[in-house]
Image 1 (spheres, rainbow, N blue to C red):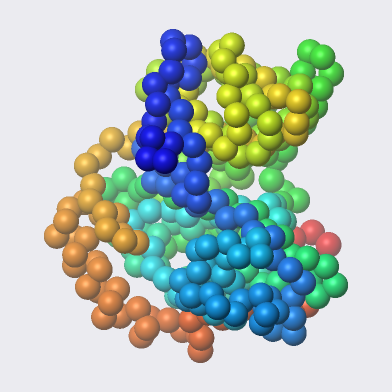
Image 2: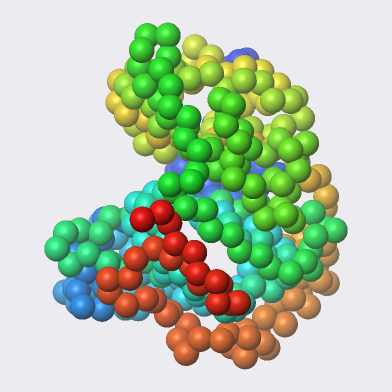
Length: 350
């Protein structure tokens, strides 16, 4: 099994290396890592939680083993991730299916989902909880959540945390057809594609400077369709993640699903989807290229800084949390919204 976790060299062509995907995906600078959560949650009860008979016997608080098709993660009532810290990097969270309830140490709160994007830049200590409420009691509550971590350069470590919500109705989606009339769509979360620019990220983000060539694209392809990924730059780190589908052809080679492909950044790449619907993520960007140190939820410039930050978190996280619960979630029937600490409320279009 170990060899499946290692990058494997391939023949000359656009694909440099491959790797099979698990819960956490490996990335390259400027990205840190990706978490992908896909769970088949059942109908929710009055607490927006799974029925007791389906969570009995689990190691609640640390449940990462799929039983009945889902995991509770660190949740004990509602699945998800109670209060935890981030420090020194960004988190881009995209629930394509399902809801996320959010509370943070800045005093912000909200519920988002079904294609919305939350972009958090945590240059300094930032705490939040992310719970996955089973909001529907008349049907199952499957989720599909991708969380992408992007590093911050050393000059921006220590910057004040920022949060931005991007509603799915506002996010550019490029829909097209290949030469044979087969459909594809590209959701532009960062960077640009097909003449469409993404909603700008937080100002401190490495992705805010177009010269850094950061792109985050969610690509969906119909059976047999093809799409061209134009060359970016030889210095760009480019990775394609084949999340679901049957097969894909890259540079004349055929590959199965659930794989990461490290691609040459300076070459055009044609992605030829197989005979099933295909879902892909493209992550690319110029590397930050700075030496850093990390441990747990902290990425800073040196081991000494990381140890000091970890000690600060241990001493101050509960006093810095402004909410009454560390696994707080919104009442049943809550619709998508964000309320910022200054009282501003944003909602998606009616």
